[in-house]
Image (cartoon, rainbow, N blue to C red; front, top):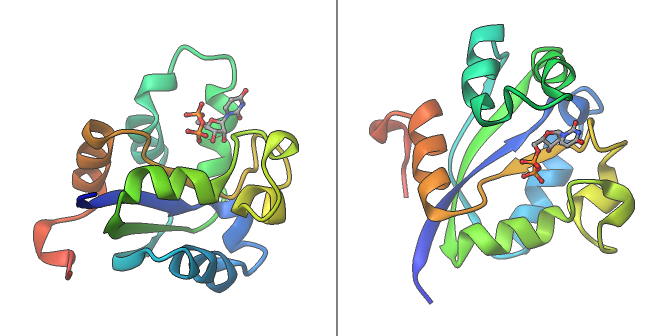
Length: 140
Ligand code: UDP
């Protein structure tokens, strides 16, 4: 297995409930390393750009509203099989379908307020990391 990097976000529904540390601990306990991290309050334009792939979906307006409603922690995670591993510890998009012990089962409120984001493939990981971080901000 190769060491790889993925992009992760702790969404506003979670930062508002003071869960930044609890969620980061679940990520670290799974063996992933936080190699970049910052707290941002997304603008409308940043949220729309980040989620552009969903722009024609019915939930897009609600998604952008949620993502601009408070601070988000954007992170780069590093580890063996980091992309798939992070998706596993996040759990299913809808927390009602998420496995026990996952971040979303433990902390998410609903499909719209589901606490975390994680890249789903190597191409999206590279794009999403570049969207939020300069190379110099990532310290492995
Ligand atoms: N989302 C939503 N309603 C839906 C589907 C998705 O509000 O019916 C939101 C949800 O916050 C999700 C995000 O849009 O995390 C991106 O959706 P995606 O299918 O990419 O899920 P993810 O990769 O986050 O599990």
